[in-house]
Image (cartoon, rainbow, N blue to C red; front, side, top):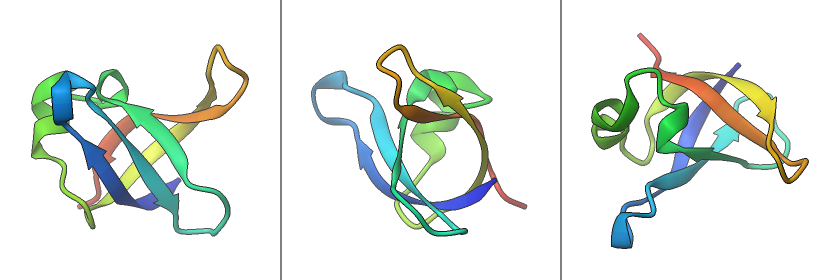
Length: 72
């Protein structure tokens, strides 16, 4: 899937964000651990970046983005 980073939260080491899917629909949560390159890749993300990702169902039953990488 492809989408745009909407929000990045780095305050108090929470390290999460939300992506808006290109296909439309609800924004999807992501945690830095879902970035293909871990915390370093997360720190390179910026609001407005276009990314590729996959969807996984979290423990809470809600969708979350994983295998996140900036689109080429």
